[in-house]
Image (cartoon, rainbow over all chains, first blue to last red; front, side, top):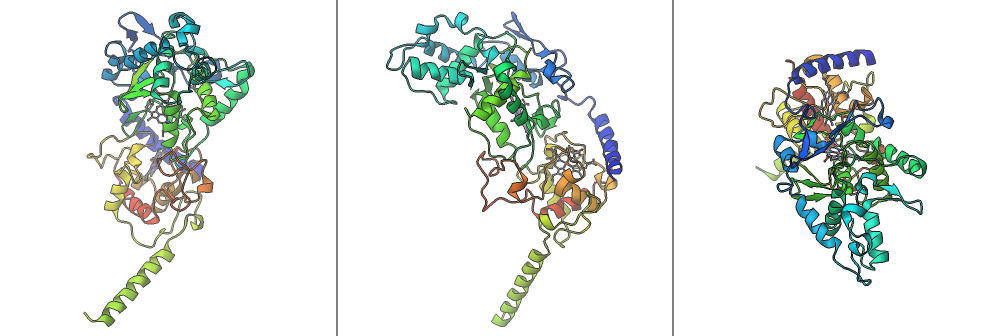
Length: 288
Length: 164
């Protein structure tokens, strides 16, 4: 019975494949290059990291799946709407806040030196053995050093600050550690990636590993990489954090999602980041 | 119209409603054949292909076109291609098989990305939510993705798709 049903399906799949050849938008852009201001070339296609051997033929930035217009917005810092968040973050960097009367700059000096490479290695295990995202490090400085209130995970201030910090790694390859103390977190994140959540029973992998390049209604599915985050989403007219994106994708499976800043999402973030090891940090990106 | 006539009419309406409610096969009671086909109607009421087409194309109902191309619906924008085109499914599959695939495609294709449209038990899912709110499901309102009659309507439409 199974072979009989499968052969019928194969027949339809073959027909489907024929119909699809030449379809617009079917795959990542074959040769577009992401060059910022005509100067800085970012890596949007890379060999799959060893842990994805046989799973993906290569890794692709979400940038390659967007329209000509959207891609162009990210190539020009003046047109890139995410730069406003970067500017706000920059202003905040040297503004004192909290009872200790300190600013980020008082401890960290010039962000272009002290924050270079930070985005590329996040999330990572801190000295207490906890897995921390960039937001955790920011809030730790705010509460313990500045004696200021923690920012909400998805607050405007937090998104502006993570945008500014991420920009300091623009062009560097994503390179998160997955071994040693990170290994158990990474394993749990991987398990989440393949879990079929919600009433629609769809995992991250169902959409971003099994179906990338295909259309789900009007959406062109990418590999769901996070090398471009935080990202300016045209649909939201604002910056979207990594955990907010995860929350939305799980919600779309008709599931009870996880909270932004939850341990689960940190672990998922580590695993998803590691699938992009080798792509450039885009600093801040633009997506549909 | 006299009152006796009205009460008689009402009684018969109630009887029909009761009959169709009891005739509706609950997800757990569905009788499968070869793990792909459901030979018996889920409601006993013939499906309406026009309503089925509406379920197929409407975002808030089946939204089947999110994943399937249906060339017979040229006016429906943004048809996806995560699944095979449905052109010709009425020739490839029997009505009973189509009912089975729509109700629970994972019976025949265990790894399928296609959602199960006729399963109303929240325990069958991992972290089932309250529709698209990201919140936990509400036990009072949780239901199958499509009603039994909507599945009959969809099947009635799919059997008409005999051309490739």
